[in-house]
Amino acid sequence: MLPVARERDFSTHSLSFLNVIISPNSRTLLRMYGFDNMPDLVTVKATRTSFFPGLVGKSASFQVPILQHPLSLGGAEFPSFGSIDVSAAIPMELLTPGVGFPRFLVEVRPNEQKLWALITVTNNTSQHVTAVTPQ
Image (tube, rainbow, N blue to C red; front, side, top):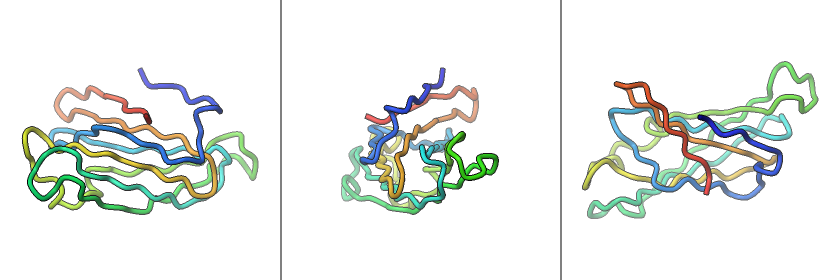
């Protein structure tokens, strides 16, 4: 079951997702929703947390556009939205397996509006979905 975001769940502070597993057997999608339904550019940072010599603490940052919902016509009836495949955005050198699949701390830094986000990890074989919410 996917979580429901309430107005109080949207934040202007960084959103942190702990222990996000990146596996070649799954798709890892970060979905971001902007409360004020305005276009925005959000910074996402993924930091390796699982053990592998020389890789723990290494990170990659990328910019993700948040687009205004086309049916809102300047109002905030719908949230703005942006998404990115986290596993595709992280450089290959950070994805070297250690003990098990690599784990990351994923941080989303809002820019102009309050955001809420979640990460979904979909198993490519079973199609089971795991939702990871901000901590």
